Length: 400
Ligand code: T4K
Image 1 (tube, rainbow, N blue to C red):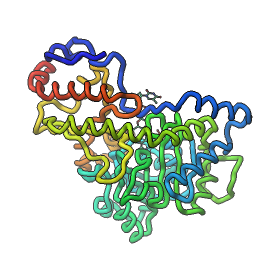
Image 2: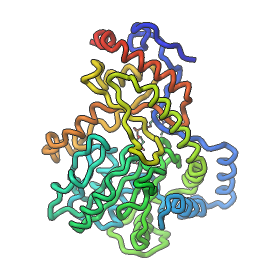
Image 3: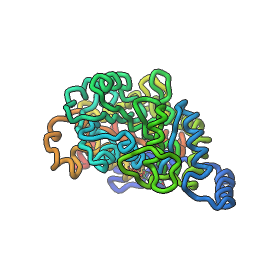
Image 4: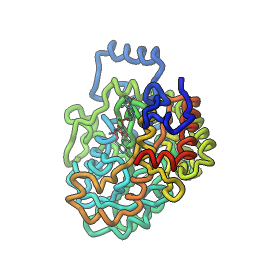
């Protein structure tokens, strides 16, 4: 049960009762059907086979490749290890151009491989790096560009591919947000040399943890399969170093059920996204970001931009007011990776060269969406936001 706010004093931030009794999260948190889960796990118990490329992992590799329409999918432990394995399989060296407006894993996977990240600013509309922004950063030390399809919106695949072809660079993508998103109507998964997905519990395809590399390059797929494990190798391609990045049977069981429920899950996201879009049409100072850009999307992230010219409430004030009401909105990605340790001291030059990244990281807010919340809850939350916007001056004054 929720009670709508009639006065500013009733806001939980000022001592009132929270709008929601239990916290509501931004994550997808898709739960498979319990009986299906039990059946799948019974199979694991019966086979006494838990890891090292078991039948469920192989099935997930095959099904995910088919689902995306790519030649190879290689499942791994998580989306971070996935990127680390990609750097080894691609045999990169020197510098890699990468956004700072992304989850830290995108950049840190490069550092684990001894590569130097070169931070590129992002486009204010798509929130992604582009060929135009990346080209001036290319030096003789550059070996690759790693783009993130942020919020599932494609990261200039054509422009970046032409640029990489021209300069002889490898292009790969962090597609952690982009399962079932398209570019020019084609599913993300086959762009660049390799794409890296995440099946984290908060993602649209929940493997509890898990990740996957997809590529149409068979030789590269062999190197990825070699790099993801130490002992039981299916392939004997040469890679600089290897890691235990294997997906377990338990993860594959969850991931397969996640794949089964994917379209239902995306439909739910889309329905909730529509409610937010309708309700936010007259929200002065809060603009819903178009994460689909006219393509198919999984609507995994519901992103709003706070416009300081149209409301006196800051992004952080919205964030703390909502937290008090048990709405655990998120400030992805704050701060930009260039402002995190160790990059702020290693590369202080970026503190002044990424204006769009800095703007976005201090003005965006992600609202709850996904299987864990209902349309009623989104309506109640929307009522609350409308109330905050209507009373922004009084609230801001009380927050001083
Ligand atoms: N590249 C990009 C662009 C990424 O966004 C990510 C991960 C990666 C690479 C790396 O992929 P992985 O190595 O993670 O596979 C979350 C996720 O942990 C992370 O996977 C994700 N991106 C990132 C954007 O969000 P947190 O720390 O902000 O959120 P977390 O895990 O606390 O979860 C969000 C909310 O969901 C919480 O309020 C609590 C709730 N929750 C979470 C979990 C895990 C639950 O209720 N149950 C749960 O089991 O990072």
